[in-house]
Length: 314
Image 1 (cartoon, rainbow, N blue to C red):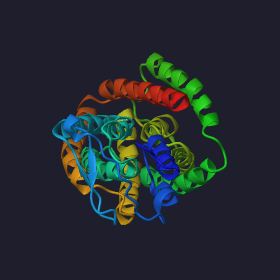
Image 2: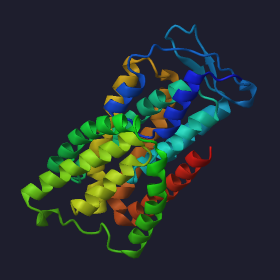
Image 3: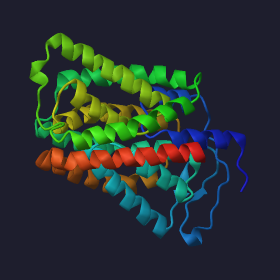
């Protein structure tokens, strides 16, 4: 199978983005026509096969085994997303591994995760674990930061960030494991209004820039930032992170949908299981608190570490 240069570029973009705020979607896809390159796999083995007339109608046939894999992965990714963020580290590679058309992966993934993100957000909201003032401030500035990060990505090679992350991730994991009381208590009331505003804005700008520049594990780092800098307990930090994540998922989904970069038959199937996973994950986080969030957080850091290694090797 011959892959054109344009398709290779999009494959690289899809592989390296796990969370797409509005800015990234516009930078990557707005202005590009929907192009359908004939990608046909042997669907007798369960791989995805693209059909359609190549004029903007996206339709992908999934074999039974591929559909089962997608549904299972989106269920477990929903649990991870609802608890600690980072579900995209599972869903994006899964689409690529089953032979899904590379230029449709990001948009389909975002739309398939939208209802799940809303489900988790509603559960955290009903549980009273969202601090709207800080969450909204961070969400708005994250969109701005993502625009700057995406722009910076065009000027600076990602390799520099990867080396920094390889050194930083083990240190973060060890600190969390050693500090048994991390995220157990909510101490946001110890901050003044001015401190909350400044820290919320900086969290949004810096994490948005990271997401725009590299993307992988962005939701997890938003959660960590809320816990460290705003002194929220892990459940409250996760709830705040859901506000940022849901806003980003919505704007990205809208961007991709308007660009015609979504396979809706795959979205319907994946969404059902992702909603179930998010519902279960949010319930576990609200009920068990740090006991379930801490190990899930470590798991995502490990997956991100492996992901960075793969990006450097492949």
